[in-house]
Length: 369
Image (cartoon, rainbow, N blue to C red; front, side, top):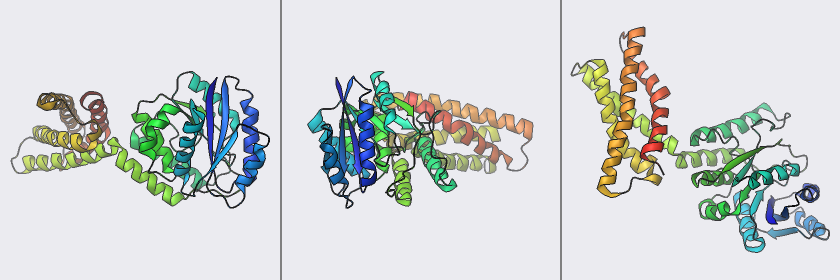
C-alpha cells in the first residue's frame, strides 16, 4: 500500500479545519490502495486552530500537526514537506488549502492520475469540468485569469492550464529535488516556482478539473499586490522565452539600424538590404541567447561543439532570413512600398512569424537540453 500525505498550511482556520479533516477522512475510505495521512502545518494561529486539531486527534490517528512561525505559504509548505518526508516516507505529497476551497472529493481523481504515471497532478480551474466561483467580482475573475495566462505565456507552456492554483498531488522525488530551488520563496509565488521546477525536470504532468469554492469562514491571506509583483518578477527572471523576446528586440534594433543604413546611405535594394541586416542580427543574437536567454543550457563540447552549434544556428536562422525576404517581397508586391511602409511590414513579420518560429527551433535544435 502506497502512502500519501496531505499537507495543509493553516493560519486562523479554526472555523474550517474540523469539516475539512472529517471530509478527507471520509474520502480516504474510498481509496483502499492508499494510506492517507493528514499533516497540518499551523503558523502560530492566534484563534486556536491547533487546539481544534488536537481535539480531532482523539478520533483520528492519521492526523498530525507541526507548528511554525508565520513566514508565508511557501515556508509553511517547505516545513510540511520536509517533516512528511522525514517521518512518513510518502510516495505522494498533496497540497491543499485549509479554507474548504479545495473539495476533498477530488482526491481519488488525483491518485488515479498518479497511478497512471503522472509525477505532478494539478487541480485545474481552467479546463472542462473546472471552474472559479461565479459570485466572484469581475476584478477578481480578471486577476485570477490574467495572472494565470501571464505565467502560461511567459513560460510558453500553454498546455499547462493552471499555474497558480494550490490543489496538487506530487510524487515525492519531485519535491525532494525541488527543495533547494523553492526554499527562498515564502509567498504564494511558491506555487509557480515549484511547478516551473517540475516542468524543467521533465516531470510528467496531468490535470484534474476542480470546481474552486470560495471560503465562507475566515479571511483570505493573499496579498494581491505582493503576489502580482512576485509572480511577475519570477517569470521575468526565469523565463527563457521572455529573455529570448528581449534578445529579439535587441536583434531587431541591430537589424533595423543596419537595414536603414544600407537602404538610405548605401542605396542597396530594400529586400537585399534587409536580408543582410538580418544576418548581422542573427550573429548578435547567437551570442546573447547562448550567454543569457539559454544560459541554463549553454553550449558545451569545446570549440568544435561550439562551432557546430553556430553553424546549426545559422542554418536554422537562415529560415528567418528567407521568411523575412519572402514576406517583404510578397507584402510589397500586394500592398506597395510607398514611403517607409516596409518598416511596418518588417515589424509584423518579425513579431508574428520569426519570433515564435525561432524560439521553437532554437529550443529543439540549438539549445536542446
